[in-house]
Image 1: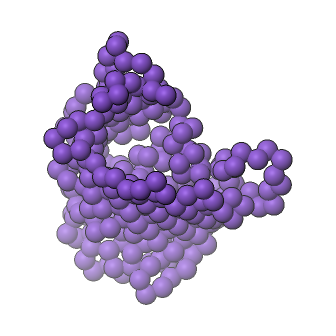
Image 2: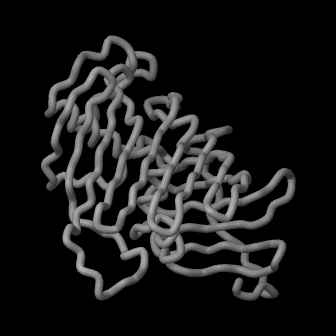
Image 3: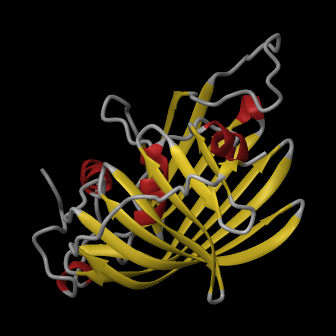
Length: 259
């Protein structure tokens, strides 16, 4: 079964929805991995808060699905930097400092306390389920508001303190997906890693239809690990699908590597 809702119109998909059993709920969850377009563009307001304070900026996102995305970062009318993320690397230019970054996903993984790859960021931006695994048996629970599908899977987290001598008693990661019983949308993902005292909570808020695809109006991310608590808010605007734009980054020859 490819998708429970893909053949319905946006209006029909949220009307007259029946209660789902365990098998139907799992099929619905996996159907939400399907992306019915090849190009995505949006302007996104970003709020970021950690132990060092809070800041807000605007980002443009030009994404070729499953390939790469790029754009600009700005505060008001001033463009402060540009970026490119592909399946292997992250590139960033700081226009004020006239420097650039070119690295793998290590620094971003350190922020999240987990091994981060391209698919993780694509899923966050598009409001998709993260880390689904068809080989895992998902536990099912039905409440008035949610169908909850839960699983343990092998942990793919780096030790936050990089303690190579630490004894890891439990190398599992516990993931819960919350499907709204009224709309059948994926509203929340909860990730817990007891051995590293890491939790990631993702809330997809008030999804809006774009043809057969539902994008959240906002995404709220809370990351808690031993070194910090981080809050990230994404606020979407001016979404366009299947309008080709150039995905690249220009690094002037005069720029040096950022310290």
